[in-house]
Image (cartoon, rainbow, N blue to C red; front, side, top):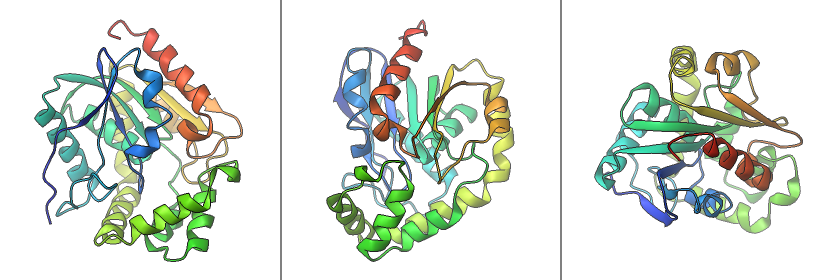
Length: 259
């Protein structure tokens, strides 16, 4: 089934447009600690990627990085935004990089939180096991891989993820995305190098204990971005170290003339 592009959802705020792009197997709710911190500086927009979240479009006929990138660009076009800042986490950061690399929209800046494709190698078994998980114990183990502090993983969170995975078509969609993330990794050198030579301001935020998508110093150097490495933090810095991440994003924006 083909997902139909829909307008972005405006959460609030005033100023230049900022679009938040969530990660693999997640949804717009992952930005609950981020969006309000930006309201004084920007107009904040979100969407759920196809096959993600209760408000998402249905799965695309081809759930690849390329098709997801085009889908996001179409959603932005329908909304009527001419230019915007992008903040992405993991898969969402990968899509942000692609949007800038392909020049599909006018990207004013990039905030990349543990971006997929810039790591040494994303954890392949995590991606596959996440899509396949059918028991709450298995979900708990996988969710704990995402954080340094396991107290952040609640039973209700695990139940919610399991319920999401049982939605028809979700597991198949996640498998397709995982396959493309894994097999398109070699192509990322060109994307990273091109963005690294561009004039788009860019900030990269990473947790030093990221088990799922560990930082690659060589790729970070090639990306030529400002870097914020957070101690005792896993794959979800915007949740696990929310205050530090919000402060760093706001400081980054304050350095820009356009925001």
